[in-house]
Length: 366
Ligand SMILES: *Cc1c(COP(=O)(O)O)cnc(C)c1O
Image (cartoon, rainbow, N blue to C red):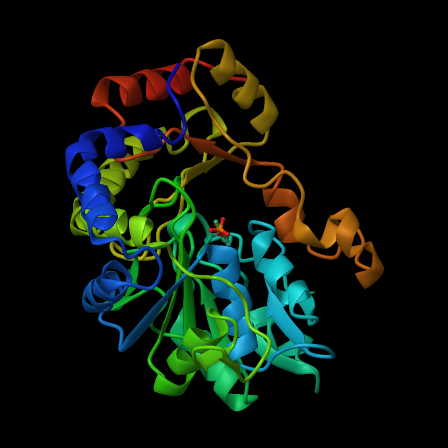
């Protein structure tokens, strides 16, 4: 079976270094908010060229703490995309705010910035674009819209660690950037982890307080916060992985180049890529009018493929009360039936990839 995202490969490859890092943590006997966390935060700041980085327990918490740090809550609206992992909207709802969806761009599948302004009301507080599948949104353009309406921009960069827009890394262009280190993400650990980056010292300080029960001074609580810290063990493992991220991204980009021979074959459409650096190929999604046939055929050939995501967020049961209906976001609703993720991970072998390409070339579902 050729798998979609063979996470195990990279941890097997780095196993000795990871075990050494874990041993170091055990021997030091410092397990929460110790030197591994502070060193990782420094190193990740350096890599992303960000002023501040605050690690948290997972990517969902990164989004929740980002919203809380900007005092977004009950009665507020946050504009986002209906085509994303549920956690994006879940975080907005968790702080008591309302997600307001906007249709997507048919090329990048990201929230269409030209459709943002018509959704801005006097309750809107922030725009929350998602760099879907690893391809960045035009954040500078979204920043301009936000500035004109005094809104914040929170980048959900959970799928796009290492991608860049005109030299600036994802997460560092908006007011706050949020990352996840869930095992399948481009930079990941063997469990949960998350990160917030910001260029504002005030926001960084507030997130540090929120992740640690709303406290600046131990046992003195200034606000209701969370228990949301990155464990020392995961910080140590992420420090082992971080130096490899560019190499891994380059491998993903090279796989994407090879997959691009599929463009036009049997009605397959390969991803539109804005620029060389803007897409880190967390997922490689092709489009096809008979997506489900291809999905099934690949399975019979022992090749995994994936649907991201089967149901747009505005049509989820949990958001029925928001009053959206089928047809509200036609681009998203069309694409969601056509998109299919092919095997993509740094250690995908050339032979396996060849087999995926040949299988797709020799199968015409129409
Ligand atoms: C993975 C992901 C999240 C959530 O991250 P967790 O670490 O699993 O909580 C949020 N948004 C997007 C777009 C993601 O892909």
